[in-house]
Amino acid sequence: MSTAMIFVGLILSTILATASNSWLLAWLCLELNTLSILPFISKTKHPRAIEAATKYFLTQATASCLLLLAGTSNAWLTGTWDMTQMSNKLTSTTMLIALTMKMGTVPTHFWLPEVLQGSTLLTALLISTWQKIAPMLLLFIMSNNIQPTFTLTLGLLSTAFGGWGGMNQTQLRKMMAYSSIANMGWTVITLTHEPKASMINIFTYITLTTPTFLLMALTSTKTLQNMTTMWSTSPLATTTMALLLLSTAGLPPLTGFLPKLIIMNELVTQNLTPLATMTMMTSLLSLSFYLRTTYLTTLLNPPSSATSATKWRQKMTKNKTMILLPTATASTFMMPALIP
Image (cartoon, rainbow, N blue to C red):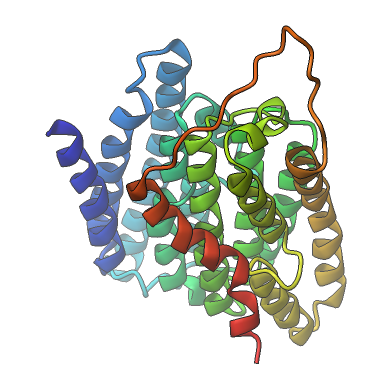
């Protein structure tokens, strides 16, 4: 019962934050949202989980302080808490840093891999998807008042650091954290020029990440070594996971290619072709570890010594497959339907 109440509070705080028109109300709802997710992170009572909850709380509290500072300063300068009245460059930049810190973009991204590694797979799913909705929609509201140079720099650095950081990871939760950082870079880079493209990218990322984490949770897969034996749990899950990883990497004609195509087109339209070229080159870093994980999942035979433990396949229940199948299908085969 308590878990259900906390989950309802998590959902309501996000909805209220996105529906508010005042920075004071948005700050209050984001604080409630932070307090609601903390019991899920520390639920396992493991030292890594307590450490992750502490790091998450400190980071989110710092971001909330910056958000309240920016909102108060803007209210003092303009006489209103209205989100659309962010004409001052200093207050809008401070607000941008606060909201991007909550989402986990460069240079305030260091908390995300450690928090995801210390959380369970389902809690990591919430942090990677649901917890990004409210800050992103608040950025969408104030996108007209954000400095373009700042967002372009943050986006390029996030795609580079996200791809570079994920290349040497053996833990899947840390790899997904760096994948999240890279995708946030793609989202932020067109925030001022074409906010709708940023929204398409973030919601496509959520659609891709949800079945990926659900598959890892259903098959108890947490490391690259577990990936090599996923076939023993479910051959269908192995194929689905490979398609999801390739779609997240942005390979055509899968769903993940669509937002990247839109963002590249927008950057070229804005005469930012050198930046578009650099962003595409940094995406090759992310592509390398996605292809490595896909290779381990589908094309590699694991060591079969007598002492190696192999998981036997488990029966997928109807409730789990009802959630997984629609999201996995949308994540892999939506692209042909969206391209005219």
